[in-house]
Length: 257
Image (cartoon, rainbow, N blue to C red; front, side):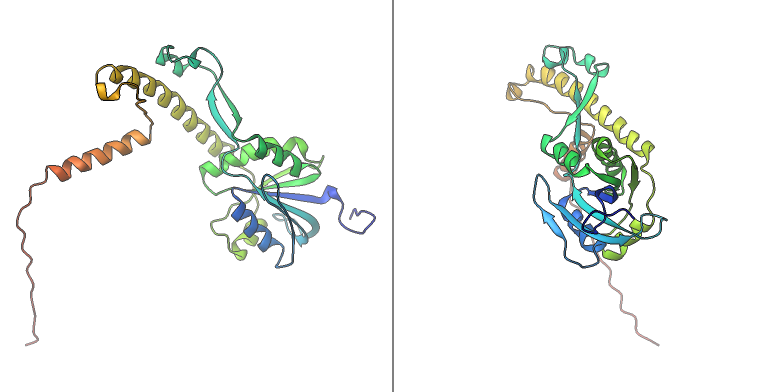
C-alpha cells in the first residue's frame, strides 16, 4: 500500500463521504470510525476525518483515510435562463418553451465540495434513499468528480436508519447512483417551474384587475400548493355547511347464562 514519509496512508487513498445534512455526516463519521476519536474541521460545512480499515462494497477491507462532510439539501436550483421572461410583460405562454439553466444554491457549498474532493480516490454518496436524494447525489457528483484523482470511483450508499449497524451495512452494499430516478426529479422540477411561473403570472394579471383586494398582490400557483389549498378550502366549506343530526349509541351488557 502506498504511504507517505510518516507511514500514514497516502492522499491518493482518501475516501470522500458526502451526506445530505451535517447531523447525518456526524453519525456516519461516528459509525465508520468505530468509536475512535476523529478530527473535525469547521468550514462552510463541518468535515470529519479519520483513518480506518473498512470495506467499500464487495471489496476487502483496506486502510484508507476517510473524509466525511455534507451539503444542505439541493446543490443546484433550476430557473429560466436570462431573456424575455425577465419582464412581467412577457406572455406567460412563453414559460413552456423558454430555456432553463441550473445555478448553485450556494457558492459556499460548491466551493466546499470542490475543496474536500481534491485528492480523494473514491466518492461515496450518502444522500437520502429517495428520489430527491438521488437527484442531490448527482449534483454532488457533478461538483466533486472533476477534483477526484485518476482512480475515479463514485458509489451510492442506501440506508434507512443512522444507527451504526445500518450505516456499516450500507457501506458493505454500495451500488451505483440511479440516473433514471434523478431524471424523474429533473422532470418534476421543470414541470413545477414552467407551470408555477406561467400560472402565477396569468392569475396575478387576471385576478388583480378584477378584485380590488388583490390589487398589488402576487397570486401564487404551484402544482402542489394549489391542490393542497383546494383540500383546505373544501374541508372548510364542509365544516361550515354541516348540519348536525342527533345520534344514539347503543350499549349492550351480556351476562353468562
